[in-house]
Length: 211
Image 1 (cartoon, rainbow, N blue to C red):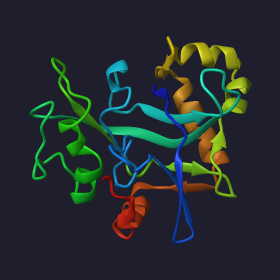
Image 2: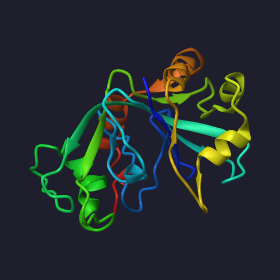
Image 3: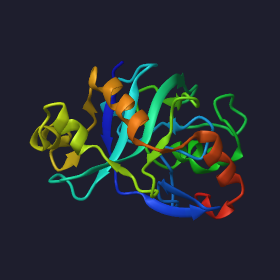
């Protein structure tokens, strides 16, 4: 299996019904969207990627960029579907792609306000709900993957350079390392929040809605 390491800003944190969740900020488009049985990815960095069904993508944030010393993973996203839109910049609530009201409000509808495409076809990646999760340690903290990468013979400088594009970040292709990292999380993440858990939390907590 292949996949990407994708850098994004540090997550907001919510304590919900004794569950700690790390999520995108709710002031606008939430992407990747975690409050859904199938996690969703439509916008962030996607034009820098060539994703395929079966890829394992790992979303991470660091203590600083580009000179991070830690990379905390907040989402393990196993791609189950790559669904193309009929219109790249417009989508209706009743479109078959749209999962539910919350996903439309928090994720899909933002194509009409941000991230306009001129020539590219837009698609949404949908995660496998059985194998995708937010990994946490026993104390509900996100897990640093730098120790794993060093064990694999990859230096921090290698990762910093691979994830940098000018002043910004870019996805780093992991190739076969993706499956090894997935297995590492299987062993080292005692808490794994899946999409169904998070979807139910979103339905019961309307304050998480994008405005």
